[in-house]
Structures are given as structure tokens and as C-alpha cells.
Image (tube, rainbow, N blue to C red):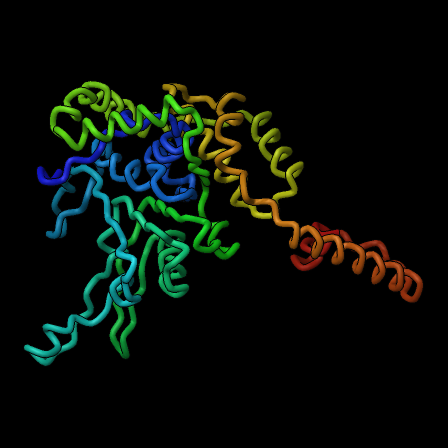
Length: 345
């Protein structure tokens, strides 16, 4: 860690339980699909993300020389500038080499630099749509494809994505919202004593950051060790079939259309179980993670469209039955197309 930058300790944040939990679940299990932090200015969103520097897990990274063993180092925090261009994000032509050496060379962008790290996108709702789409595509595919004329390069881009936004400045497109597994509403603290404690801790940190961090050093080190243990336990964590069914019942009862809802819910539950040093998910895991995974996912527009589709399909089926005879009994040998059709009926 750069000695000139000392982040505010995560455990020194007053309140904001969901904020801290969502970020830690994302570090334990990238399979949750990223974290979106939404709330007004000054409530600790960026402070919390930067505080993760103290507890980042150690990851294996390939060496530049082929055939050598990978080396291990802590994940890094890569922050996307608000004014980043598309070429800055996905990669493009190295202009200096093009001018000085008169040859074209494709350079990696921020998405490639974020490979194996945490990519933080502040004010994501203010970014150019093409930049946001490139980030989400890389997050989903784990790679970035750069093409400039006849030249192409493929860069690995596997990262944990964290976005933050102030809804006062505009909402995210629904397809972007859907790509974030966990969503946190970071509300201002309502309790006056908590707000006063925020002030006192902020003042102490500004006065002597090193001393303030020392006061939380033991707790922070213990948290980092627990996160490392949780990441090791995660591959062995299973979800009982009964809880899988409960998760799906919950998603359906809330009329959530996206299949990413149950993925985020169950993967978040697995991460919480691992954090609690268990290899089996329990009902409390579902209860704790459900608000993070399922909020802001119900779409009344999709529900209305689905109702119209069902009514139209019923009308078409009634007309078909009135005009065309029912299908004959299918033969024993069924084509692949026939199996697909029967599965849909």
C-alpha cells in the first residue's frame, strides 16, 4: 500500500451495516456479480470502498515469462476516472509509439489493468453509455476485445465491480441495474449520536491518520484473516435443496423477472456462510442477503407486458383450437425440435 495514502479503516465506519456486508461478500465471492452503492453525497460510499485496501485478499497472478510459477500479491483497487474515454477503458493505439516509431501498437486499457483486482466506478450513472456497456461486457465475459483496423488484441479482464451513484443526478438504465448482483441504499444516519460519532472519528482521522489507524489495526488484521479463510472455504459451501426452493419461491413471489436475482441471492448466501466458517448455507443466510440481492429488481413494465403476452397467447390458442384439429399422438421417436416444443407446452 502507498504510504502516502492511508485509507480510513472499514471497521471505523459508524453504522452502515449493509454497506460493509455487501462489499465483504463481494470480496469473498465474486460470483455475486458486483455491488452497486446508491445514496446521497457524504454518506461514506467512496470511503468504504477505499477502506477495502486494508483487507484485500492475496491472489495468484501469472508471471510475464511463460512456464514460470505464478506469484502472489494483494488485490489492488483500480478507480475509473469520470472523464475516461472509451479507448482509455478498453484499450487502443499507443499514440507515442505511433508518432515516434511510426508503428501501430495496441495497449491495454483500464479494464485489462483491473484484471484480478477491484474496479471501482464512482458516479456510474454519469458515464457515457458506451463506456458503461464496455465495463459490463468485460465483467460478464472476463475479457476485453480490442480492434483497431486489421489489428486485434484480447485482454483478460476478470475483476470485482463496484459502482456508486447519487440518484439525484439520474437513474441507471434497467439493463445496467440488472448486472449488479447486490444493491445497497446507503442512507444518511438518522440517530444524532451516530452522526456526532461520525464527526468525532473523522476529526480524529484528519488530526493523526496513523494513530487512528493503529487503534483499529488489530481488528482490521483479524478481518483480513477471516476474509482469506472465507475465500478458502467458499468452494466447499453447498446450498441444501430446500433452501434453493425457498430462494426461487421468494424470487417468484416478488415477481422478479431476471434470473440474476436467484444467482446473486444464492451466491451471496454462500459467501455469508463461508464468512461464518460454515460449509452449508442456512435460512439466516438467505434472510440477511435477500434485501441486498432482490431490492430494485421488480419491474412493473415487464409484468404488464407479460400479462398482455399471456392474454394474447390464450386468444391465439383458442382460435387455433377452433380452426385446426388437435395434434395426433406423437410417434415414439421424437426429434429434438419435438422435445423442445413439448417442453414449452
